[in-house]
Length: 311
Ligand code: TXA
Ligand code: MG
Figure 1 (cartoon, rainbow, N blue to C red):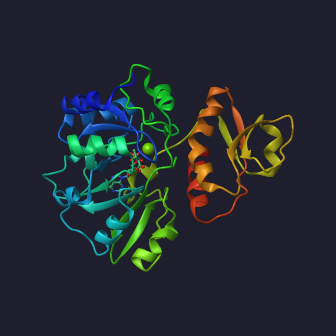
Figure 2: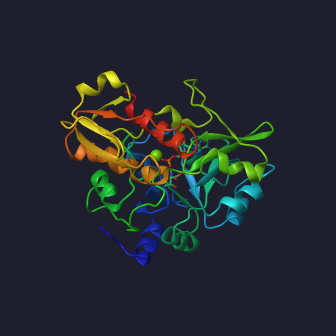
C-alpha cells in the first residue's frame, strides 16, 4: 500500500514498520524509540537476532548523541561522504542504543542516506533503524514492487522510485589504528584514499563465531534458482544466463542482461532486479557471467553474486 510522506511520519511515530526508499536499496524502517517495532522488523524479515541493524540519521550531529567515541578521520569521512552510501560502525553509549539493534555488540552502524524522502522523514521523526527491505536471505529490494514481492501489496510503503545505486552502503570500522571495510558496497574502496590518505583494507568474512560484521556470516541475496558462477564448462547445463550486453551467449539460453561491461554503476543498479527476475521467470538453474574486471565497484558486484550463489 503506497503511503504519503505525512502518513509515513504518523506510522513511524505510532510504532509501525514501513518500507522507505534510500539511494542504495529500500529499507524496512522503525523508530529507534520503539523497541516493539524494532522487534517486528526481525520477525517480518525472518532475520537472525545476531544480525544488527544500521541506524539512519538526518545529519552527522545526531551521531554524536549515540557515539561514545569518534575515531580519527570520522569527521572527514562524514563530511565528504554523507549523505551517501557509507555506514560507519562506532562504539556507542549502551544505554542509548537498545541491545536488540546492536545484537548485543558494543558498537552500532550509522548512516545518512542520500534520498530526499528518507531525509525528510528522518528530519521529522528522528533516527530510524533500517535493514534492507527483503525477506532474510533474498535479494535486496531496489523498487517498490520488489518490496511488495516479499511483504505483500498491503505493506505500507513510501514509494521513491527505483534506487539509484542499487547495492548497499559500504561499511567501515576503525580497528586498532586504521579504518577497514567490513562490507564492500556502493562506494569503491578507492574513493576513501583521498580523504584518509590510504585505501582501507577489506576484511573478508570469516567463519569464526565472532565476525566483525555479523551479517557477512549469513546467507544473502539469493534467488530460488541455483547459480553457476562463471565456470565455462557448465554453461551448457543452464537454461538461463545472467550476463552483459556486449557478449554473445548461446542462442538457446534466456539472457537476463545486467547491463554493459563499460558501466559498472548501471550493472550495480540492475543487479538485484536481475536476480529477482530469475525467480519471476521460474528459473531453476542459471549461469552467471563472472568475467569482468576485479577493481572498484566490480568487486562489490562480484561479492554479491558470489554470496547469492552460495548454498
Ligand atoms: O545501504 C544500506 O546500508 C541499506 C539501506 C537500507 O540503508 N541497509 C542495509 O542494512 O544494508 P542490512 O541490515 O541489510 O545490512 C546491515 C549490515 C549487516 O551485514 C550487519 O551485520 C552490519 O550491517 N552491521 C550492523 N551493525 C553492525 C555493527 N555494529 N558492527 C558490524 N556490522 C554491523
Ligand atoms: Mg540486507
